Image (cartoon, rainbow over all chains, first blue to last red; front, side, top):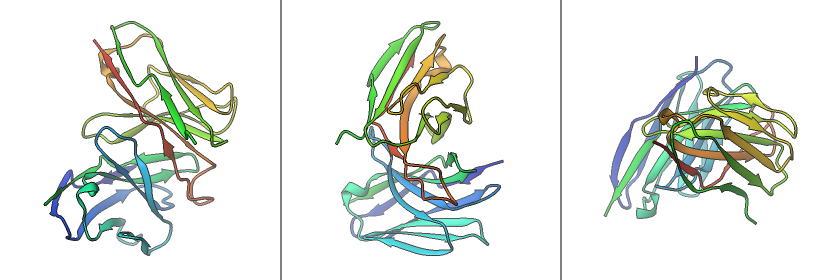
Length: 109
Length: 117
């Protein structure tokens, strides 16, 4: 089967660094994607890791360790606008994606 | 550039009624998807299409049908709505297949909030 586990909620203060973890059990694993969704909004793509290691895009970085079946999204210099839900997603075959249940990030002043 | 447009944005149905949700994309994408999102459950794939005239079942296809008669449109139908189909429905599109061939960035519409009473 396919499962991706994420914490349901994380709270951090403005300006801090926060890490959102994702552990997965998938067959035929090809990589891990991350999406951001603000309340009432549409999910938007953040990053994708095909290989082990760190991918950096501005304040956001994503990490993957295939040997540990684990990845994380790192958000630096947190801003209030980063308050949102974050989903990890993994492909099944070429055409399907499975999403984790999401982590709600609360950024406090 | 509109991206992915879903209509309607909100709808209330009575049990047993039927309706069609429309998704339109203007990015010339081959792949299109329908997901439903329920509280605490993330996004679950209902049906998807890898090109005009093709459709395939996803994770939770029961009670839904789809059609992709034109490349830019992907329709999701509920023939006899049930309260269990109360959810937020998202359509997405991507330019091609996913890993290991490509990154597969999915572009989502704003969603349709459906309540079935």
